[in-house]
Amino acid sequence: MARKTPSSTLTTHEVARLCGVSPGTVVRWVESGRLQAYRTPGGHRRVMRTALLSFCRQYDVPMLEPGASMRAIMVVDDEPVIRGSMVELLGQLAPGVPVLTAEDAFQAGQLFDQHHPCLVFLDLVLPGLDGFQLFEYISSTEVGRETIVVAITGSARRGLRQRAEEVGIHRFLRKPFTTESVRRVLEDFLPEE
Image (cartoon, rainbow, N blue to C red; front, side):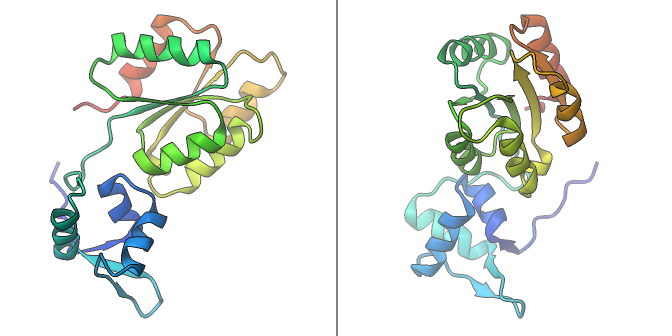
């Protein structure tokens, strides 16, 4: 497969992905004058790749290689015991892969915007915004359309699994999940290094 040649201009979303920050952070960099950008006739900001490289060197901002994927996993669950056991299990099954944790949808949304994990284990029943609302947010973003979301739930509510499949959640695991079921998810969905 031929490697895509990086574009000489980048959108604020592409800059955010390369730098591991939110698009809002990139806009603030531009508005403060630290990151040079221009506007298209349609009013969209564009950043020259050379300007981004210069900015990253000047402000010591780490940048991913073009086309690199964030090989990180996020676990979203309001139960500390579940989060802890998932972190431990993922550490055994996928050593070296960063694991982010969040206890609610708001915290998860912030972490997602900052780190763009490639795989999310998502409890569907959360306080405040539920897992379906978080999934809707993730899948509405450009990078989120490439993110694999696996539902994890202990709820016995009827129709939960069917609704998860209808909205496009990739896999459904019932709590308590087994080591083998998590291993299969990683084998099927975690990108190779």
